[in-house]
Length: 128
Image (cartoon, rainbow, N blue to C red; front, side, top):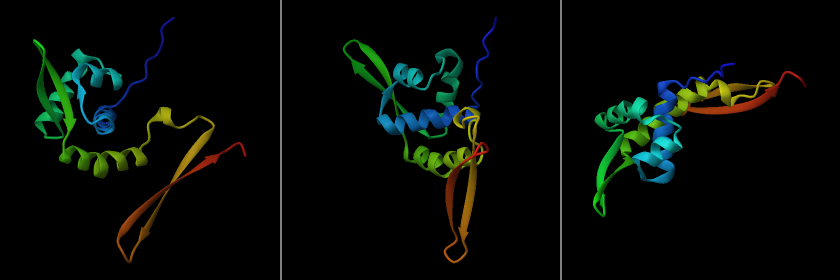
């Protein structure tokens, strides 16, 4: 019998990395990989790309005789998460975040006078 693993899209991995760094401020490489549920060998290129794009920063910290790699979110990463990743997850929620018996409806109210967008998520159940 084989167990089916759920597939997590790259955009959600990026969001999880940035969000975890925002929550914790700074994490060493091992803690970041572990907290985000990633495999170091498989997902370390994502960390490299995030650093290259300026969304996270990487520092080498000397702890005794060892060098520890620590990651922090950058201002650009915070803005990217806030303006791109969060709206993406609202529009296309992860399949495992919505219970099977509930359906979330997204209502976008647009204020024409101020040109601002307001999002409201209302729970709804077909069983009621």
